[in-house]
Length: 440
Image 1 (cartoon, rainbow, N blue to C red):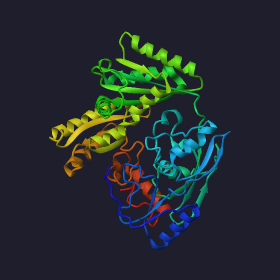
Image 2 (image 1 turned 90 degrees about the vertical axis):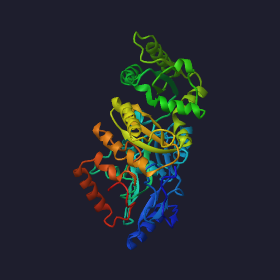
Image 3 (image 1 turned 60 degrees about the horizontal axis):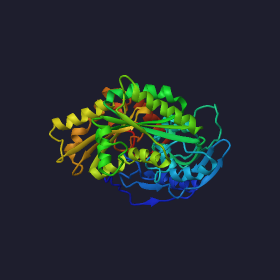
Image 4 (image 1 turned 90 degrees about the horizontal axis):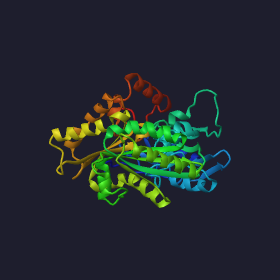
């Protein structure tokens, strides 16, 4: 996006954990700052050098160490690209428990360090549950080997949890042991157009009740985002007459073991929704082929690229109660209008899409002609105040990085931040590990 510009003079690309350890020991002895870097797909400036710290890129550590097709446990280097791991285990009929739009570039170590969520969290949970063990180089160069492949290990403090979402501030993740689920034997999806946002919650309840355990995604797209997608060649999945004045759209995916069973459930659901006395949807389409299945997902996953084509986006990844998604989007749009900053001369679009299943809203505020200080000043801290007023989180899955350190207090109490500082001091008393990130 061109929003962050690193200041590093040196980039090191170790190939082994031992080499990472030697680098960190050298830096610790000389109090040289270190920035661990993965695939550089983050959106909050967590992997950039702010004060000419040395960048340690993990991209050359890209070996799969082992995979057990019976248990589904994968052990791999931190620099392995997510999509490469997916392709490695696919012949064994397993999938990675997370799926991201950046899967072709992001690395598993970075995913873990930011506790990435993505499109499969609703079905398979967060990395706090699927990661079984980690290998980490601590800020003094010590190698912490907790690369366990055990499903159950109740022996004291679960230290690996500190590094999941730690954003490289407590150590460098060099290896991971992760539980991969069996690949579903049948996947289907439907795309629904809703007349108003208020229908989403009752729709979510019905879909959960009708589909049960086979529901694997429930994604939300507002009308502004949908129209932008059409403008840039995504879809159309529905005719303009069918869509009419629909305010938002929902993508539902199922993953199960029997295609006939799952298709029947989806057909029954669509019929129920379309024939209701007070329909919650205007129309919908059920994928009938692998290509149509992919086309439906392409609309949702392609929105991020379309946003880049519209201008320079201010991207906010927040969690708020499901009922408040549209309220947050509307509040930001109204804010920019009231400031005289809405239009092609300033903010041209405000839109929302995201994961309804886990309360994660991706709010995109697009500056038609580029970033400007007065635009950011109008957005922040207002947006964080709005999120806090709805008892939400200023970061749902992207992390804090360097972008949101000043906003941490909107989601964490003073006591929580104090104890985070104490943990940082214990692990990294010299403050050399990714300084300037997470903590204000």
